[in-house]
Image (tube, rainbow, N blue to C red):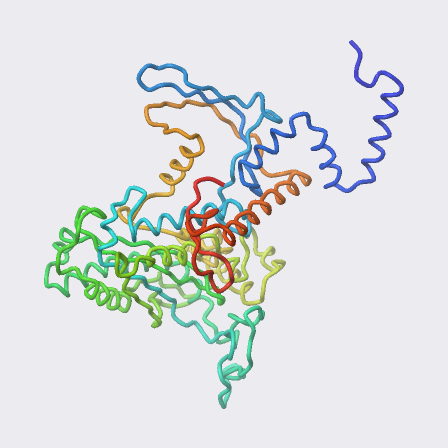
Length: 490
């Protein structure tokens, strides 16, 4: 049996092509390779199904679906006939800095998660919109004066203990590198900043427990009895401020003991909830392990508090959509939105080479230094230095607040298949086969993602009101982007 290049003419043609390819860049060579794939159309179909995911995960294996009652084989799938004998799946990274298409889909799921807890749907009864609920913003305390956008701190006579002016007096643009940076680096409490981020999750838990205690005090029942009379359901999302500290946007709702489908007692009004939330924020506190490096500390929320009653229902039918859009937009951001990095830091030497501001480098360095203290080992500050000490998930909720991400993904998968998976049993065998794109593949995937985004923008601008390309038509945000909405499939 002879090879394909045994003929002299074929060998010469092959060598000429190789010589030409050597003069091309890495991306162009890979694009030529893609163009010569016999199953290019199927590969494009796979990448299109991921929405142009920036870092897809590849699997090899097979699956078989059977009828749960009769055991009849309904369908069978194998990657043996796929390009490279592997299947591309979404990376599901929520960060927009890592994967725009997957973060957009995650944002839409977050919208549903928040909206279902305010107006019902996705398995949550619509009566939940009648339950007392509030939207609040919880901030961190001050750790020292920082430059702010617009008119900065006015100049005052005198200097700080380190000889720096007490104010700034200048006007800073939003994109200014000074916004969020300390007015005096020596005065800034970097250990307090990092420790607040590291204990923010525990502080939120303490706040939730204190809300129950305040409700009991306001209505005159015991602290243990109040939990049998009412349930506090809540959802929060963490946002990084420009100074690099997290604060929380949260929805807090009062339910009956059985959860979202149960009306709370008559005394559980919105006014009572607002008062309970306000007093709980002021009294919630968490102790930090004492250390010679920073002394004794107690973590509390800042004095700035914003609480709004959510009326919903016929009184304000758009409340759920607006709050859901406002909260969901923060789920695709992390510390990188404040100027930090979106990947783990592995050594102290790496911190010095990070392409970040001096303030962010100081925060990451403080995490690394405090992470070496035995009394703070449980905080794993070095592992979470890239998150400036905060190790919680960007969005968390109580069990009874609404649906789950898993349920939303399962519903989307059923929509893609066009049929319900009830009454079916699927078994499979899969193994990891790689991750990410080659250089030319990445260019194609980026173009697919850009085309999808442009299609959504056109749909938003020209289609009639209703669900359009993942967004519900309505007023655009300050940045010109539409509010986030539902999308059955990308």
